Length: 341
Image (cartoon, rainbow, N blue to C red; front, side, top):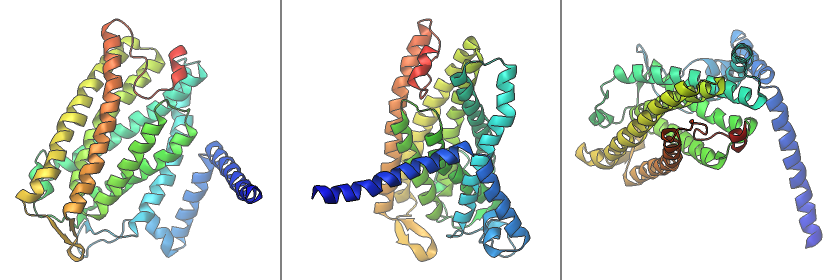
């Protein structure tokens, strides 16, 4: 038995070692490897290779309309954005924010790394929130949860909504790679769970025609993340007073969006399906909302709220420190050793 276990353990050990080496290679070449893949896709499209075209253009367009259906070929676009976000993140950090960090005289290596990461986060969430709010503002469900359910299922969606949803899904899937290459964070396990839930909700809501709710939740989440990443950037630059002020905006935005607005959305998922009589399961017509599906979504949203409350506890602790005269020097998920920098 012992010899058999050794025979099994050795290949597994070798596999883990090779996996770590491959991941380290990918982390070292975050610009070159994605660029090679992206170039291959673009060249494939120029030579009219059918599969390459699916990575670059939205599929399932309705004849004569600017609306689109959904299908498995949408996974091509998601994969494309996973690769593109890997390239964009590394390239922008290296060629834009690294020179900026030198101008701002951020000499500590770990602070400079965190500055690059948070500056990229600030750019992404600012763009994502702005685009998401534009889509929601021009929709019937602008601050009106009843239109999450009126005329459900919303099988066909506009071009911009589909592009936004698939690109956002690509971003959150790419975050798993980011967690492996970034400097370890003290709440990395919580972040992994958060990303798993987020990706599950994005993919399931997309293919079950609940993109309206998804759009609203994404905007609500992105809003507080803008202020959080901006506060961190200011901290690493050394603007402690401004950082504390921005952190105050973050706290207000967090409580309002991730607890108050969030609760209203979850309440709508719990109560409104019966009001608008959408409890039904008919996949042929795009109808995917029976009691099991309702429980599935409510459970995932409840788990997200548990994580939000976990972070809220840390946020309250930081608020108490700031009010007592200290700085906001440990914003939600920075690594332990930053306290000593």
